[in-house]
Length: 109
Length: 115
Image (cartoon, rainbow over all chains, first blue to last red; front, side):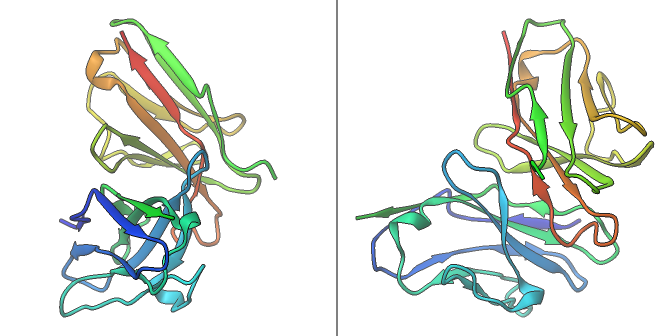
């Protein structure tokens, strides 16, 4: 069975500090991984996909198959990055993403 | 395009009543997902539907819960004889027919409270 683990419920940093939101997954095949974000009073929306290898709002995430991880990183956090972040996994042949429980990021001024 | 519309935003029911949650997908989207979010937990998959078909309902409780996505009109998640444990946020998401799993567009959710 596939599973997504986000070990931190809450991550609190100061503006300008580096941030890393952890995501580990369990799946034996080749997964597709995503990060979704929910800002205050807004809908959950896609932030980035590993397959796109893109940087969005300064965030990047690298798929590490050896460690089965897909951590989300940003070198210098901004206050507007404060939000709830969800890691999601899509296994081969499936149309149903599996979500982690989410990590709340708070960036202090 | 107004995005995925869910209503009501808040729904209060007494134990034993029925709850009907509605989801209108984005224009042109033919795939609908329902997820439930309990306090302190992440999004738990419930059911995946295409127009007039239930594709996967493996996350749906066997009793009291049902879902539909008719040819015309919104998708409906129906909970009969609600219990306090059904209190949660219910999210609907939709995706386009040509890339159903590449990106989900979420609604704002319905917060169900069972008294």
